[in-house]
Length: 594
Image (cartoon, rainbow, N blue to C red):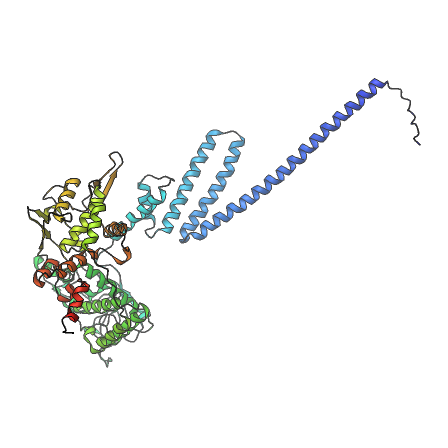
């Protein structure tokens, strides 16, 4: 049962009592809002501080990661120091924002940009083989952090490496050579003695005639192999029971060949003209081999020298014993498993000894037997590239030499047809100049100034007939010359790199008179082979020369004119280019009377 509640008496009028209750409620609401606001602000400050600390930790890890990627200790120190300055600039920038100092903010931003650019240059220099030369080349071009920045860095690095290569003293280096201090001393305890570089301006390798100077502290005695005196004045001469080798010198690289052997005994004449001629003897000795052969032999002999110095005991590289050469051949067979490496090593060692006038160890029967054994063990069947046929050329002409073909397409078709018809190697095709081409009504003549088999640069002429067909190489070359605007009888290379003009939407030959590179030529020709349905992995640039030779051989062309047209020196080299057809191969069994 509900009980009625009694009302309390109050001295406050009813209306005034209601107003008091409303005022108290509004005060409580304001307090609640203020409390909520303070709690949210406090939580936000805590979250902001936590986020800031995490950001600092993450930034620190990034900087440490950048430091670990740097190779040079000096670059690490400089990069870390720049990072500390950047941290200080961040604090200064925050203070400048608080004080609303726009000028200070602008100065700090410029300083930060300079330091960031410097750190970028440090990373480029540290990762590039050319070091700070790459940075110099990069700074010479327009610096920008756009999509082309990586391309600019690679381009700058390539230019720096080329300049670094050109700045080398070639082919002679100014390195010191190591000589053993005693006859029984190991190679590791050798003294470093300065040797004058050959053919360096102001220095002479050969001793001029006249009064001999007194022994110097760096002179070596070839009797006891100690420094400070000569063999003729050796104090240990009477105590020496066995006469050491006259050529007991450690050779560490190819250039040192001209400091031993016959070169030590050559005296420079007093006559200046005769002395100049004498100083050119080594230069012309090197020219007895082609530049590419010299480069190959130099590298192979330097590798042999490195191998000789890798042992604790003494192993002479020049003169080398037949035992050490045989051991090195076995080493190459096990490590590289390449017959070409073995051939290059033996030829290089043999040539080095002939240059120095020393006994050739490669003529030893021991070396010959070991070489033959390793070649039998490492030789593998050679997979030659397949030849291009006239049917393939028909497809290439239809795609790349039609009425709508651009200069780029026409260049591909012209290179293929001329290489096929003239049996041209790539070097012969690339070095063709306008003055080497003579066109008549019935044929054209290609003058090959320099060829692989033309040792004395006598030059050869290749005659190509005008067939007046779709595959006529003369007509296609005339069309290419007309479209490319090449001038007759000039020194301009026929096949050069192209430039695409966006305005006219057409290709033009670059003004730089440089032949097309092997890499680019191979790329576009193999792409053309692939576009007509061929497996580009089975073909190469030599497929054009091989295809022309195969077509001529299957057509029954005489061996004499066939060999002359292809500029082959031997029958084996000529036969290696010819791929007989199935009908030719079946002729033997068909004529056996079976």
